[in-house]
Length: 176
Image 1 (cartoon, rainbow, N blue to C red):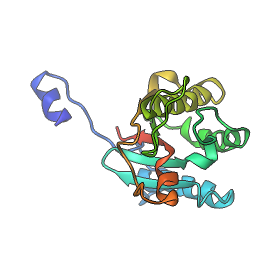
Image 2 (cartoon, rainbow, N blue to C red; image 1 turned 90 degrees about the horizontal axis):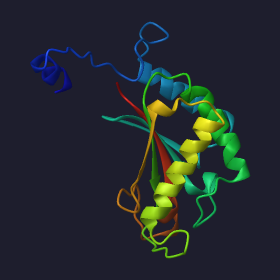
Image 3 (tube, helix red, strand yellow; image 1 turned 45 degrees about the horizontal axis):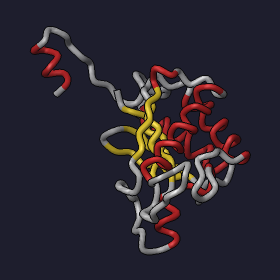
């Protein structure tokens, strides 16, 4: 669609995948990226805390709430900084835009700092993005944030495990 609109307005867009070229013949760029992320997950035993997903938007890194934040908080924990440092080593080398998405479970929150799950989800995405930009050198022009509150769950909110999966920050590496 983008290419077609570009043709209409006299600008030809080339639609490419996660990276412009693959590092090895016969290996897709998405496959290489996912391979590098999987190596990191295996090396540091993040199997229960970080999940990868590839879809039409790009590659999504689901970072579950127990890694980054304490319950009901948007302050990055000390241990989360190490996780973000390790992910940033891969992310800052990519030419792609990166969207940081905050999510919550469906348990209502109503504090002075976070009057709703919307506020909490946006604050979590914002704090993660600021850390990656200010401490890890991600290019601000390539980073955006969004808060989804409880409205984009990846598991049922009927169990503690499901709610824990839904309390997360997603880092989406947008396909070009």
